[in-house]
Amino acid sequence: MDKRFFKLFNLTEEEAIAILDKSPGQLGENDSRYVAASHLASFPTEASINSLIRAVKNTESSLENRIVRRKSIESLGHLKARQALLLIYGCLADDDCYTVENAVWAIGEIGTRDTNILEEIAKLLDKPEQIYRVIIHTLAKLEYKPALYRILQFVEHDDKTIASAAIATIYRFTGNNSSMPQVVDFLQNPKVYVRRLCIQDLVNVNYYSAIPEIAICSVSPVFRLRGIRMLAEVGIADGVLAFMDIEPYLDKVIFDHPQDLNLVHEYDTTPTLEFSIRELYETDFGRCYLATQTILKNYRNIAGEALIMACTKEAYNDYGAHYHIVKLLGWLKYTPAYPILIEALYNQEPQFQKSRTAAAIALGELGQKQAISKLKDCMETTIWELKYAALISLGKLGSNSGWEMAANDQDWIIQAKVARQRATGKPIHNLINNSEFENDSR
Image (cartoon, rainbow, N blue to C red):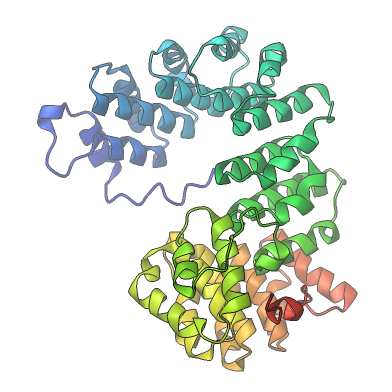
């Protein structure tokens, strides 16, 4: 579990416990019991766990307290607090489906072989208006195969995220993969949350043959890279995959050009540049990629200045739009963007991590050798995606200097990338040539 964002709150453990233990009448203007419950997930101590347990036991009926209870259950799950298992088990009977959802998830994180608990979770599949996807995932994670006959009823569910989880779990329990192509098809669903979540289902059952389709799914590269990496780590350990099997797909996702994606949206008519730039702010990356493609095809000669203006006025504070604008400035080879790309390369804010990778790729596209030293700096980071992108762009700029630095990198993917380059003698930036796409004015 990635816990990078857990410690964003300016609270000590003791302060968070004190706030969580307060009654509503004792809370100060800036106190938040919800924030306190979230923050305590960072502290695997008896004091934090006991405070969270007290919060769960507080069944006062206000909406604020119900929300705090949910978050406290979730934090106990993050902490894998086994001493809270029976208390959380009791929450399965709660009349609030979101409390039940968090209780089911937390039990999955803590882990149990108690068939009484597992059967109570399975029975929730017969109860209306529950969060069935989480229930199915937890039953799969805890390997409770007696739930199979209940899960079967969800394979045709209208909510494709539930159907996806059900199909994948049936494959996990039975070994019958005949329906798994349906899950792969969900990667092209028009709803972004379906595309994102079915990647997790494919990962959960180690469905390696889906890697090429995951690579071209029009969702954020964060989801695709995580999925491919998780599949690769298991597949390579089991001897089913080798790095050479996943390398071209990692290259595509790191480069992240819309030409390499299966776009799920389309325009009836060519939109204006202004509309296309606004589309870069969409939370559905499928729409962002379509807008990116539109700008590259139709507005190459005039988009640079408009994108700089957007970045200066608004996108600098929107990490999704910022990512797409940084990439575009590189593909447009808009040299006045160099300072913005350097600034993005060194941005330390966690939510702008994608923009650092985008900036590394964009600097290689600009072709300015002065960026070599900046890209070499990226090899000191712990962010593997950024190092991978820096290696690609260093190669494109004609520099081998990153290879020696990366040969003994702590991350196995970076080591494998360098070893693969040395073994084949192929340029490390050997990516799909986009020149035909870039010159296509259709």
